[in-house]
Image (cartoon, rainbow, N blue to C red):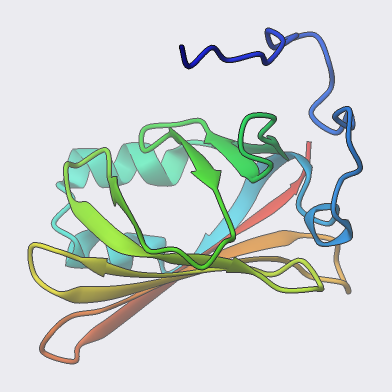
Amino acid sequence: GNGNGAAPATPAAPATSAPGKDVPENYKPLLGKWTRVREEGLEAFLVANGAPWVARRLLLGETPEHTITVDEATGGLKIVATGLLGNETVCIFDGAERESTTKKGDVLRGTLALSDDGVLTGKQLRVKDNAKIDVERRVLPESGEMVVRIRIVEASGKAIEQKQFFTRA
């Protein structure tokens, strides 16, 4: 059989607790629980992506959290985001192209990478319209904030970008 020998998760353990094996150095800057404190360009980004007024008000008013841990099963990074657009993502950095589906139902195809200094980048293609989506997640050394930058370039060449800033919870 294909039995999963992983121990059950212990919810009481803090997000920064180390798993049984050594945590790669380039994971360490991102690990932990983060709370959004501000954003840049989010409303225009939401308008460009067809979000109705009510949804924009809710998204702009919420304070989502991102909890980043080591995924025991894959050795990748697990990102659990709360809020209206919340989801759970496991990031595996082996260079392989993978497909995922957004909460809205859009199929994305692309790759993820993590630099030696802990900058997570994703290069994806939204299948329905061939829009290129670049995501970057990094911790700013000067402030200790984590910034998540999302840039979408439509097939027409029109680009829209937003940034969200998080502090450790």
